[in-house]
Image (cartoon, rainbow, N blue to C red; front, side, top):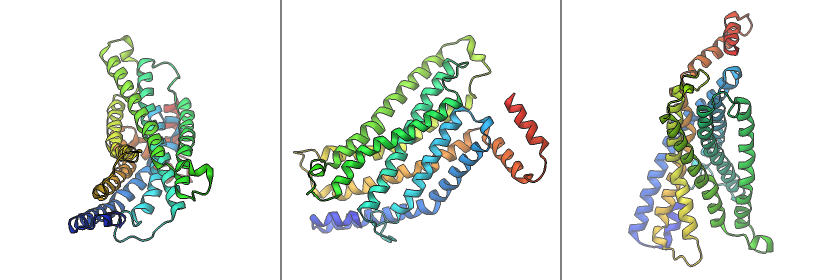
Length: 333
């Protein structure tokens, strides 16, 4: 495995045994993820997207953000089996991919992580706006859809700068332009700052505002236009879960950025441990692709009703469905 290959520099029996133990643990965890978490995440992400898009009339602002995160989760579902069946994660690997495929997977992973983190962040901010100004359209479904489009565009543009560093790190040094950019630590530093530090500060700021407005008693507290109270619990749970699952990955980027700085002395003895922790942190990040839709399914009270309407619509697709039409009219009114 990749972990054990790096430990050959130490040439001690203790290090070899350690990296073999790490490799076995990582192989078992990868297999468990592929057999349990991967199919669950794929099914629930597809279900979340299909159910909400088939009930566009009844979608709320949080629904749009969760659909956006589910689409990003589907991208992670595409990346996960390719990586977890590779030689870096398991002893019983199915293939070894080249640098081009590695860079492609990394960019897709980075884009998904940015979309998930910023969707969570903007959900927190829009929730505060909805609580503070319930009769405005600043956090409407229409505006949220456009915001999610900008999130994907911004994630692609942000990943492009990292892409340059990664590509130049894997091609020949004879190209003068790339020989000056062969610095993977710079790409990790960009992802660490934009993908984690900025969203963490914004979420913290949003939660401070939400807590402040919850303490204030205003006549708007009984406003029917406010979001369902369960959305607050779903928001709190989603933010906590996302940051718990993604923080280890971004911490490994921070460690790599510091360890790769000029003048920093690295010890080959710690390479197996670092690579093991890096793989574990990536497994946790992949886990967000099934944890989020499962949580949305359990905590969103309206999801079951939307699913039942979709099933009834499929059941009477070739027949007239007066009950469905009346339900839609009630939602519109």
